[in-house]
Length: 278
Image 1 (cartoon, rainbow, N blue to C red):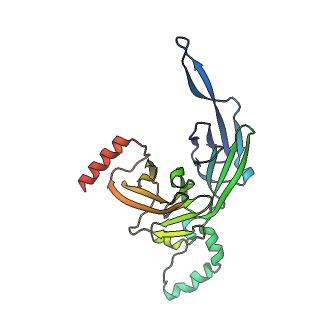
Image 2 (cartoon, rainbow, N blue to C red; image 1 turned 90 degrees about the vertical axis):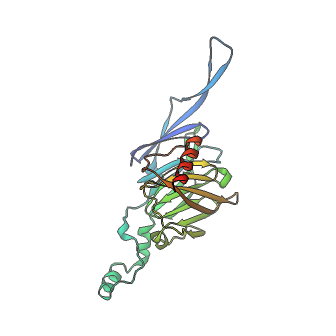
């Protein structure tokens, strides 16, 4: 897992994940820098000399997949996506009708379906509030039994209910403190039954979000680049408290993206050119 550096939206602090075992909290403070040639002053953020470290194993957190700041909390608040126990795709159930001579082998190998189900939902997300002045952290809420291939967090603005989207290869989950929504993207997403989501929907066109890169282009829409270069716009429909629907539309194709960042003019120009070519 590569080291991750994230800055809080209100520039109160930054966090630095080191070897997925330690989270370094780097508080910021506002200072006035006076110009000797004028009476005006400007404010800038400087890192306090007394940063501190959160030992994630002390919170029961190992094998971190991603960490992001969330919107809408009084104190700086982060979501940590991590895997409780290791697994692999071979444990995933596939609903097929095997030949007769394979029935006994499959049944004997996977007789304990409850144990199999545990092996396919091994990822959890925990939301931690940071009290920087007291140098303490508090677990606010958590969600368990996420798909084993969940790998990325997309923080959602307050305008669409807050919380976050959790991306996995085969589905997208929207989670906040009051409700959960799930969009299955393909056959494997349909197969991974989970009791996390209160609402489940299915896409008409199969997709896979392996190595997807994204950026918000408005409060309720994000542009997503997939591993083969296809570009999709994901529109978020919300009732103001939670996500009720995700609409995914393909808008073109390009080279596979290493990262995607927001530039309004460039995105509009690119999408116009792409639409004109199709």
